[in-house]
Length: 375
Image 1: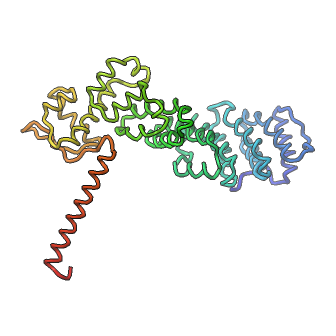
Image 2 (image 1 turned 90 degrees about the horizontal axis):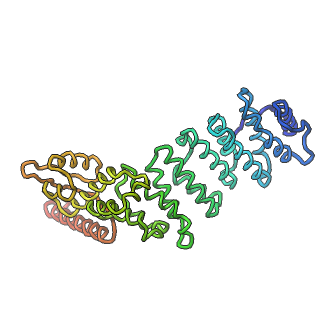
Image 3 (image 1 turned 90 degrees about the vertical axis):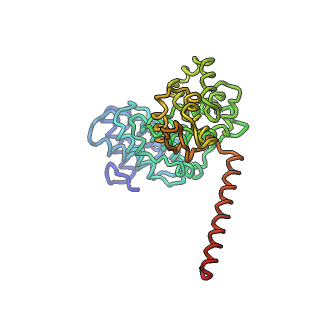
């Protein structure tokens, strides 16, 4: 990638011009180049470049891009510390101000480096942090497959891998991209082992709460398989998750009555929890029975006779259940319902259904061949 430079001259003269410009803006820096070479010049220039970020001068972007362009021609081993220093300045200086400039500089730096350069991790983390301050996460690549590739390309250790995934997750949550954020959090929690799962208590707790709070999330059984979540067994948060995974509304009501303060401390809405548990209870009933009387629904879902129809309409809108109302016989006829959990029993049922379809297709083929030998 071609990065705009301050002026088209030799690197040494460019460093000298940068020194003069920054000194003219009030920085305490010598106009004379350092004897140690370009990387020493850049270290001193980056240390003093705060004065450029304070200025609204139209040359600021060119000046900062000139620093970026010089960084990119350094040997890899001399880049890392300088890039980390520059990124820290761009992220922290006057947080919230001139985000587009800071993002552009970080983006130029990120895309100007070789794809496998490990220090790209530092720049990408900086990009996410700046984007999060100005609701610009949509402009940052956060595709999970791409992030996985970078983790491998940059040969990140466990700590950096967790830091990167956590940053992406938080940024996606702030950007109201809850579905993508949930996938990243599952990726993060899934990367822990039995040995370090205890270190992910906060992440696991946060993951559960946000999943329960998300109005578009209705399936939770996959969370129970994650090692950091399993580590929470015996705690109230795990008990609550288990209720949302497979229990009925009555179980949640009993839990709430005993742990009202706990629910409130999580920032969860009891009314929203009730609405979600009604749907989840209905889903479970619809899997078991293909016809449900209004009376049964009123009892199990704790709703009035005048609320049944509206409830069914809202349930169908979620696409978790497909059914129709028979007003004459006061019942709901179910055509399909999503399973709340998908374990060994559900796989067995799926296998039996596929085997049945296969046998039926074989019978149809046999019948057709009997009617037309050439078929």
